[in-house]
Length: 339
Image (cartoon, rainbow, N blue to C red; front, side, top):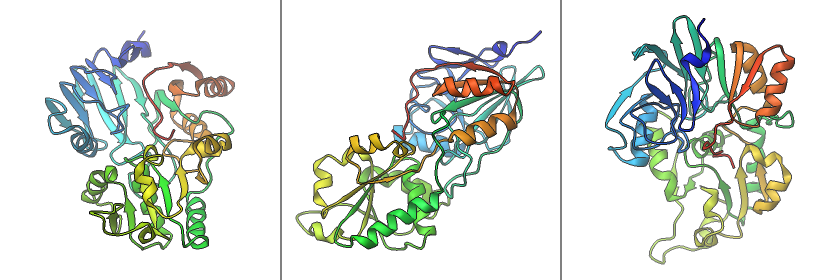
């Protein structure tokens, strides 16, 4: 009798597919890798061959250079290919541009690896596609019942109300450079904000890549004061988006009495906002919250739920109460770009 572990098992390097001869999101260079999305903890340079969506391959090239691997295999969503003995297809994960779930089929057994995902609408990427499987391999970044993310539009309204309330101050919005930053910009545009949005230089290449893939971001300007020209007051009443790691550097001190905001699912935890000195916490995540995790598992996992990383204990216990066999894998090396 075929066991799921005959098709996929955890190793120190990541999830290994023996009959296919490849890893999924390996943590160290591998001969063959299937990569679910472009975040650095899942997409690493140095593999010999990489199969991923065209968008993810372009993101990896933008971040690591054109020689990030020796051979690229672009796979469109729902395209089926044979890798070794395994039929592999990629399906939208709703996480960031090009993000995908990896569906593996071998001898009648189907396992789908979610990568990172979310279920709510995102104007910058394809929506999550449910893929019924014998085994669903899920993340659990927000795998506790306390994590129920509010409506995105409400969080953007909170930001815009603050901009109107404090026209003399710059609003610095901390957001991860891939995915979160572009999503915030699009959500602001949907809320009717059509003023120029200023961005840190670390976001420029990825914003241009999103535009190249048909994601309209509107007018973006560099958040810089060049050659002594300009002043702090030039950014009063403006929105500046940048990596939160830069908010305690010299770069952030160039702005007018800044209101520090941070967009993350973790902003639901007030202590984290206080620790970071965040004046305006925005609860906005690119990961599934508790309700999305449980409803997705209920929808697609026919026999087993495996949990790669995150708060796996609570989700595993929930699955057992639902009569679903659960297996925490406790993989290490996958960081949370929301944090």
